[in-house]
Amino acid sequence: MKKSFFLLVPLLVFLFVAAGNIRALTLEDCEKGSTDSGCIEILSKKISELGDQKKTLAGQIAQFNSQIQLTQVKIADAQSTIVKLEKEIDALGARIDQVVISVDKLEVLLKKRIVATYQQSFISNLEFILTSSDFSDIMLRIQYLKQVQENDKKILANLQQTKANYANQKDDREEKQAQIEESKKKLEVLKVSLDSQKVSKQALLAETKNDESKYQKLLAQAQAELAVAFGGGTETFLRDVNAQDNIGSIATYDVSPGCSSGGHLHFEVHKNGSIENPNNYLSSKSVSYSYPESQYGYYGTVNPGGDLPWPIGDPVYINQGYGTSHGYASFYGSSGHTGIDMQTGSGAGDGGTVKAVKSGKLYGGSYKCGGVYPGTLLYARVKHDDGLETLYLHMVPQ
Image (cartoon, helix red, strand yellow):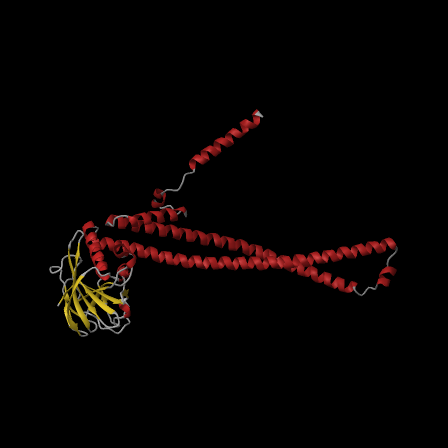
């Protein structure tokens, strides 16, 4: 008994030390580059917590970093899944090869038994008795025939089962191959998303120049635009206008310093109280962008396909597209950018005439915005027929 106890001591010590070396995965591990799949839940939780905090540039950059790390973990997880499935397919391939060999052997054996059984069928009962040496020989031959019949049944059953196994393993291989293709597609999407997230982070840093006050200014502009979009401004009826009538000019920074990052027009379309995609209303036009192609994922693009004229003259430069992009989700949230930002000419802040895109009733509006850069957002609203409205923000109505 004592000897058994002393033999167990080293094992217990080893298990104790091994248990001491095992620890739970932490956020610090994930932030240092761990690709453990457990990091998916940990990083997702951190991103959610950062989203609930007060919006700051540091917080947004931290959220970008966590999102990038999360995507990298998902990429590693997808790659690991592909490798695992490929190994399983190789193993299935080897088993299928063995099954094919077994089927071939069983079919050869079964064919021989069919021939033997066929030949046996020509022997009559009388001939069977006459060719036997005695009664004992008859019994032995009968027992032998029964055994042969049983073996034939087993061969047939084995053949059927082997063929079924072959079909099942072939189905398994096809299913795993489909899973590999799905994982590869997921991997490509994740890689594109990762590249976009990295570009968005760098674009945000470039736009704000890593300056918290600049970030807060952009945030105040976004919040003011959302407030106007959802009816938060004060408006006064000015007059009836026709399509392409001059309704004002883009406000320069000297005229409207609050709620704007510089001179530009923010154009929106509403239908029966709902925000619409302006691309569905503005006519097709060749435009330029005030940012490089590498930042399209951050600022967005336009794809107009409607029949309304544009509210500003050529050349049109796009400052930001409609909808939610990786970068601007931090400013506009799930609502996304509610319009298209544009300007005339290549330089921001050069003003420019604004025209109504359709006849209707013109209203001049304003909204007081707070934040780090308080001021007034000036805008115009034209109410058209059929519940259609167009809004022109960051301009002086006339």
